[in-house]
Length: 106
Image 1 (cartoon, rainbow, N blue to C red):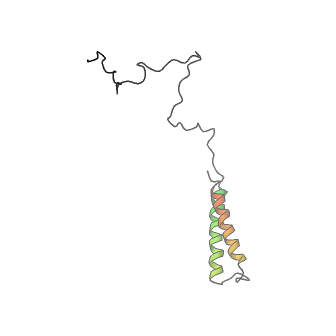
Image 2 (image 1 turned 90 degrees about the horizontal axis):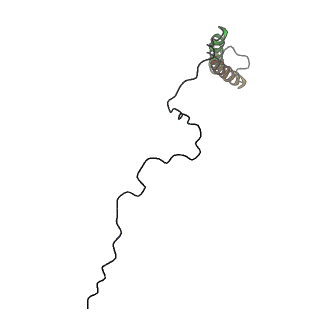
Image 3 (image 1 turned 45 degrees about the horizontal axis):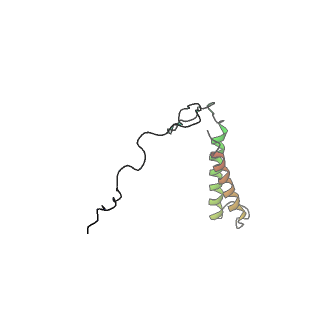
C-alpha cells in the first residue's frame, strides 16, 4: 500500500539573507556629529617665514668649498700634506654642512 506521506520540503537556496531595511539606529541616542572629511585640507600658515640672506650664501659657499678641497686633493695642488685623507674628510664635511644649511632655507 502506498503511504500518504509527502517528501520533506527541500531547503530554499538564494534570496535575501539579512532582514530588509536600512541600518539599525544606535541605542545611545548620543549627539549626531558630522563624519570626518576624507579630503585633504592644508593647514593655515601661521606666518610666512623668510630666510635671512646669509643662509643661501653660506650654503653655496660650503658646497663650493667642499668640492674645491676635494678637487685640489686629487690633483695634488696647493694643499699642505695633500697625501693625507683628512682633506677628503674636510671636503665631505663642508659639502654636508652645505646640505644641512639647505634644509634651513625657507
